[in-house]
Image 1 (cartoon, rainbow, N blue to C red):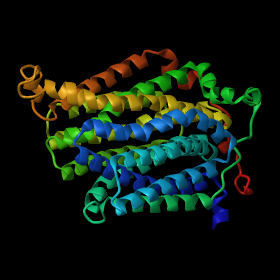
Image 2 (image 1 turned 135 degrees about the vertical axis):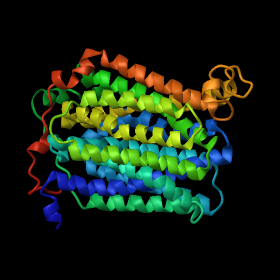
Image 3 (image 1 turned 180 degrees about the vertical axis):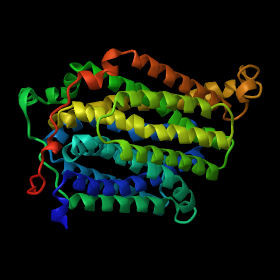
Image 4 (image 1 turned 30 degrees about the vertical axis):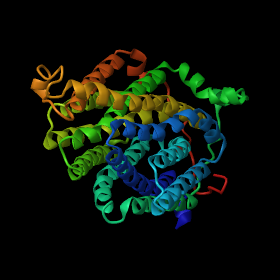
Length: 455
């Protein structure tokens, strides 16, 4: 059975993907439960912001160093050790909860450990995907990864809402621990091809990079000669900043007029949107597509969905906006990822993708830090019943709790659409797929029939 599965890279990818799917479900279940727990225990958007900062900042700080290791080490073992590290963090959390010693700062620290593990896991899995999946199926593979996220977004809010009342937070984290065990098991069942097969100029350039500093900065030097990819990275980074602010504000906005059960339902409908978008990509993602135009189109549509969400405190309106926004995410994420996977040489993808992760995610901690104070100290006071904007904008979107956050959603949506229009004017980004040649793609030639443990 295992010998048959080793014969094609796509079969290996599917096994690994199944393990990661279960892991994502467990992690999303825990993340949703922790977000609600922290917000309900603190009643502060700022405290919730700090939780998100500790989830992303360690990833940003160590990603440049991680890339060097991802390109040097066996990517399968990097994924295995990352899952084990995250599992250990979950085990400690369960112990603290069962002994009644849990504090909010413990949750911050546990999320920081998980963030470090993810800093290794994400680029290793993305780079390994390029080795395993033929170029014509990269969009489908990306769609499958988005499908994992969609199922997590769809099932986690509903399950977490039910399980919190049955097995409590400690039980949910224990399930997350079990999901890591399953993911590690699938990784032990497969082998990856050797990513150190190099060709041409890329090989010569790589041989000249000897010092640690040169290897850490390799991603920057690689991209700076490819202005279209630089433009894509900056576009994604700005979008991450705007979306990061929205991420912090989504729960407080909905909870300002709806129950936690309705919050779970809205987020689950958002998960349905991601599921629909992912299935469309999996079904239709083969062959050649103009991915940059797909990226522009759905980024603009996501801006409209953000704006729509802020206009009125209505469960129906928020549900529609959530569905539209989350349906666009797989198209945005997959399009950007496929472009990078096609244009970056496989043997240096660890460093380049880690550099991308560091830059692309660097805006998130800033977004999380400014979101809380902007909401609590500026926009919410502006939109009180007697606030400065009550007689103008308040006549359109209403006043009271949550309406300042609603105004922020409208502004974020407008900014997202404007950024998309501006990015489209940058010719190297608009023509990146046409002007930049595809890199040599190992998976199109790899024969897995005789794959050994060195693969």
